[in-house]
Length: 126
Image (cartoon, rainbow, N blue to C red; front, side, top):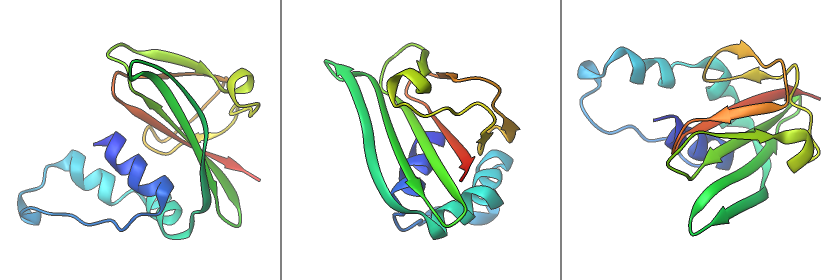
């Protein structure tokens, strides 16, 4: 869920929900009702890939985008094991003090762990 929502959001792609809405579970509803995510999705522009580090389809990809007030960094793990990415080293962006949109917490370092085939979506103030 996080990976698809992060992809659609950072690209500003149309967000369409299929299925029977009354039967959605709490987790799915929490994604669809995340105010920070919905604001980013509506206003993101200038999205671009910053880094792709993969071998045989396994590794990580980093995208960013922005709106008037914030910069967004999306980290995608294409591997089958957790991966830790140091954003200051890999893309020259410090995410220390940024806000993790999915985990709803402040990030306190530049080493970001992303679960297998997962994604992290970070908001940085400009």
